[in-house]
Length: 247
Image (cartoon, rainbow, N blue to C red; front, side):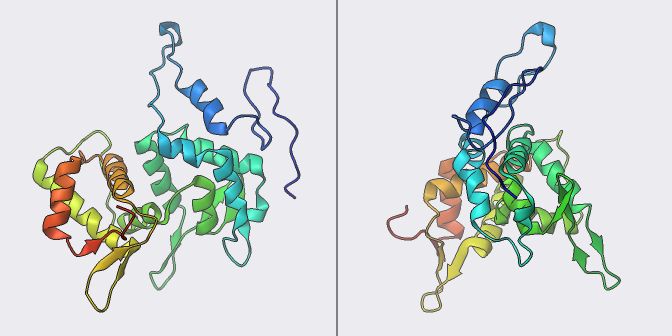
């Protein structure tokens, strides 16, 4: 059972024990530790700066929200405590950089198997406990868009070189076009009367571009600037609309 946890304590090594009653969000405590400039004697490279998405995903409110919905008929999330959920979020959003997070997702897909009919089934395990894909997504803080895009690419055998960054403008534009096609398919609703595709109401112009930028960085594509991205939108996707009042 998910019983209330005691106040956080410091171990002999100085590591903080994660629990729901921490005075500060997990993100704030961990950000200070991971972003501190190391000394030369430590011989470690400075970790990447952590942004708005990571802070939001590791906040107390976000971790509590994991347990507010059922994931499947078995409700796999009941197997986990708040402390375990917080550790999963920290491992994905703070301890890994973008390329490591993607490798983690692909390795998780590699644990699945195919039936004799060639149907692929995922298998996920965290903290020594098996779970459904929705519980795995919630515990890691992975969106459906990110999950299914990576799953499609895994099934196609599309693996990308983390040491190569694509900067060619034509290749980056093609990537942006492919991203828009998948994005509108996942988050758009086609209007039968007009043929327009209207995005779900929680998407603003800012959030759309930030999501595109994040995914481009994840795949080692240099993202188009905001100006070029909106020019591409107006030229090729003028039928895709953001709900009035959300632009």
